[in-house]
Length: 117
Image 1: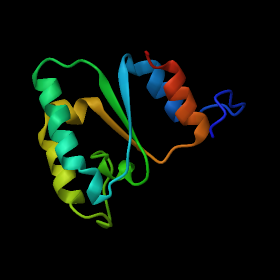
Image 2: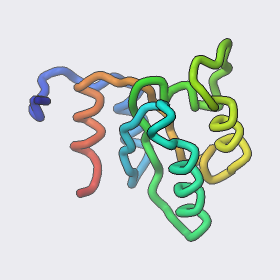
Image 3: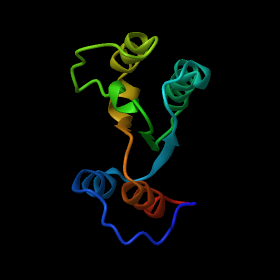
Image 4: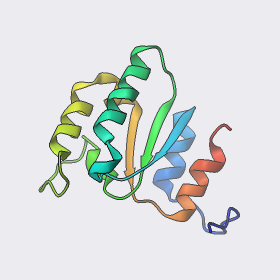
């Protein structure tokens, strides 16, 4: 169980991002094949093509490997290159999807508590 009243402060990276982002959707996942991240990214791209305005914050194990601003030295996850290419080729995804990776409980609670219900 997560204590929703965490005493730990969020990291500067998360705090600054949330303050500068506006409205967002938190997507906690990982890159395991059964999560079907490719299909989910295509659905998110479709959301933007239909006028969607919310940004996406993706958290979870290995999701930081989808951050196209970072160069990868290895491809430890199946179809990672395909996922990164989709994000890179989509102006909507590359602009509105923030892949944070595995974050601390304090960061996660900060993101959740600052979001709209």
